[in-house]
Structures are given as C-alpha cells and as structure tokens.
Length: 379
Ligand code: SF4
Image 1: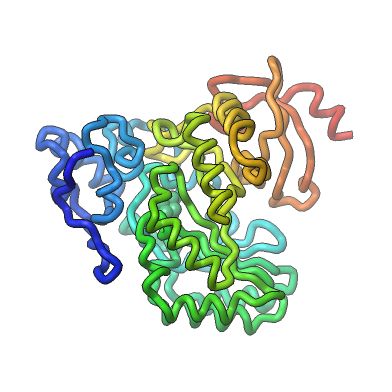
Image 2: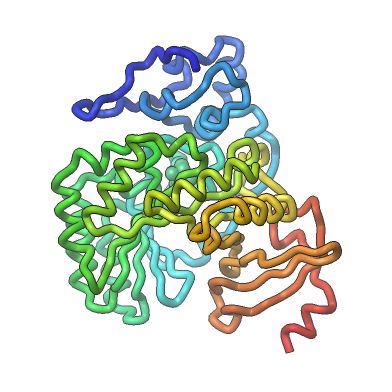
C-alpha cells in the first residue's frame, strides 16, 4: 500500500474532511481533469482516515471505488429519486411508507459521499427534502399511534451535534408509542471516533436505549477492509452503551459483488456483534450505472456468500427497496425469479409471494415480466 500523504488521525485528533478532488494528491492530474466534471455533478466528500484505507497501487481498489468518482457516473441512466420517495413524504424531511415506521431525514451531510448513494439528490444545492427542524416530524409521529419505529436518516444523523441528537432522542422517548429508535449511519466506517470519543453521546445511548425500548444502529459497512480495529472499537462502544447493531448495505459492482468478499464481511460483522440485516439491490439511481449488479447475478453471489459465512449471517435478506415495498428475492431458477413483499406500502401486499420471468440483464423489479404462475400464487 502507498505511504499516504494525508496524515492519519489519532484518538485525540479529529478526522479532517475534504470536499475537493484536488486535495487528494494520489489522483494524477490527467485523471483529476477527467473526474472534475463528475464531482461537479455529484458532489465529492472524504476524510483523511478513510482515504488512508485506499490502496492506490490497485486501480480497482474497492475503497477507492466507493468514494472516488468515476467518469461513467455521467452516463444517462436512472432517475434521481428511483423509488419515488417524494410520494411518501408527508412533511419536509418526514417519510411514512410502512405503517409502523417513520423516517426523519434530519441531516444532509455524510462522513464521505458513497458514489453509489441512492439519496445523492439530497446533497444537491436545490434539495428541499431534508430538515434540521424535526418538530413537524415529531408532531406527525405523536399523532400516529401506529408508529413504533423511527429511523433517523439523511444524510448521516451521527454528523449532527450531540446536543441535537439528544434533543431528538428526548422528544421521541416522550412519545409513548415509539419503541425503536434507529440511527442509519456510515460513521462507524467513515469516522469511528465519532462515537468513541464522545462521552456525552455514549451517555445518551445508555439513557435512551432502555431494556424495553432499544436504540438500534443500522450500520453501513460495504467491504471487510472497512472493518479496521478502529471501526470494530466503534461498534464495541455502541454495544457497550446499550445500542443494538446490525448492518445493511447495497450490493455494489467492483466493491462487494464477490462471494468471498461478502462472506468475509458477513462473518466478521457477525463476530463483532453487528450481523447483516439487509443486502439491498442497488436502486436505478441517476449516476449509479457503474455500481449496479443485475438481480440474478446478485442473488447468486448472495447465496454463495451465505453458504460460506457464519450462521448468524444467514438471517440477511436480499431486498429491493421498490416504490411499492421491500421486495425480497427469495429464489431464482432457470426460468423464474421468486419474490416476496418483506415490507409493503399497501398493507394488503405484506408477505405476498409473486413470480417474475427470469431476466439476467434486469436490475430492477420494473424490468421483470410477470408470469402466469403469479396468478396462481395470488389466489
Ligand atoms: S452514507 Fe448513506 S446516505 Fe451517506 S452517501 Fe453513503 S449511502 Fe448515501
């Protein structure tokens, strides 16, 4: 691995964030010239800790692919809001799609920007889907007793100040019917010190993650190389302070579309107390063509990884976060793809099993043709 030019953070020092590609000295000038227009279209952000994980000698390094733009992102492909989240937005920064779960999009920044992000529209200048003021969301949740789960998301909620996070925890714990508070965050991968060095945040976890009503960290590791000693210590800090940890990530071409890579990550995640929960099929989001894996190929990789990974990893589900619900891929044979609504926008669809014609080039549910067997299963 190259000796990095940017210095490594220590426990006592904050990681340093950068927003310009020309602040990454390892990118040669000709490549920089090619990539600048990409970073102008889809914003770039990284930090010295995460950049140090890149092996610059490997042109296909998975960590590099995760945060350094690629020219193919400019290909005309997909939509910015691929699963039509705007249709389930009930107030600014508040999404309510599944009966028991509300999402609060409370921050529009992340520790770095994953190139394959399905919410990259939130990082654009004209975004108005995120709000720092969650009062409308809290009011909405208080008025909906069916909401037992609240997911803090964005962007990354752990980039908010601890004071704001505590205010949100306090307000949510004041709503009797909210049982589970989830924090969707890639900070344990991008900046493990965020939790480790913040004793006030740790105290808040102990206070608000109670035996009856837990706080969950929905961590986002994509590759086993992100599971550094520091990242493992970050997860350990969460666990020791009462937070239940699980991992969810998409399958991403060039990063984790390999059964060995996925199996290693799943095993290690299980060992450290952060077992895999969902593996997502990448949404057909604008800019994401170079990162997409067809459904059938993804399913085979996932199955092979489960065979090799630890037993706890086998609880993971391979799902498409489709406009109509979380559609689990449960099987593929020579002719068909078998699917089930693991979550459904329309409660009548929940658990519904259905079948589509196998198409090895398809990336998304809408590309799959129904087959007659679907009618038989529906009845
Ligand atoms: S951490 Fe999540 S929201 Fe942030 S850029 Fe990555 S995928 Fe997008």
